[in-house]
Image (cartoon, rainbow, N blue to C red):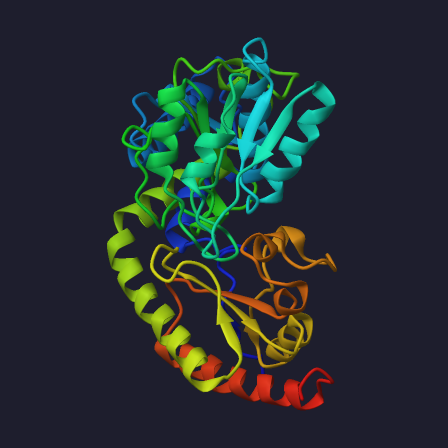
Length: 388
């Protein structure tokens, strides 16, 4: 008998919605052409790619669909934006500002810019993971050319004051990029109202396919291409278009955004039930992230006196899929850099568990997780030498 899986790791990835699969199907077989070619069937594919751009532009309120670049992932989008904008503006300055809780695709890219003569400042966050705007203002220098701060955190779910960050950047003549990989499809995004110059999304976070993303670059923002070898995407990103992936991204984003309110209402109900059940039934637990300004599906707990790896192994034996943080950092023995940034000590941070919900989760699954989590924590603490 096949073991039932309770999947609570939607921040890592999601399944591809059947509606999205259907939208992708023709581009694997009948409509296989290269949209950069000139013959009629290929031009029809180019029209599909153009329509997909319009879909992305609509849901983030971009002024022009030509501001949308299709990429291979969220990480590629972050790299492309940071390198592309910083290099194009290096004659103005070589200083970048970011936060300590960014995804590695941002933090490691910013650090890697040092070999090209760039410097960076990391602005602190509070204990809820929210950026300190006063410290941001203090960090700005005459040679600052880019601020890159994520829309919402992938580990603890905290939503940043994106519009305020964008306003500060705009007032100072600095370009603002935001990694919206976790936010897209779950939170309303308006690049005009929020003063966003560049934004990254990835399809597999909102029930689309893996291996495709989109990058918004506002018209007029100086940009130097990061990938060479081809002239696709108006010369901004080399590589043959992933037709099926692009069709899937557009279909998934359209589906997620059009049903956002309905989906979030259900997911928030289940999230609050999970949080209440964990906090009321298990002692010595810390709930991480902002209590209200957080992604609808995100929960993150630290269970004192035990380590997350042991918890995850026991949950896995019960068919419960969760994580200790970012999937991109799995395998690392170091405590989460996000939890360190909000002031948690390594011994506490090592007991972190992230459970992120999706639209297919049920109330019965949440009851099951609460009941089993209580027993797992009790059993592990009985064996822990850290418990008095």
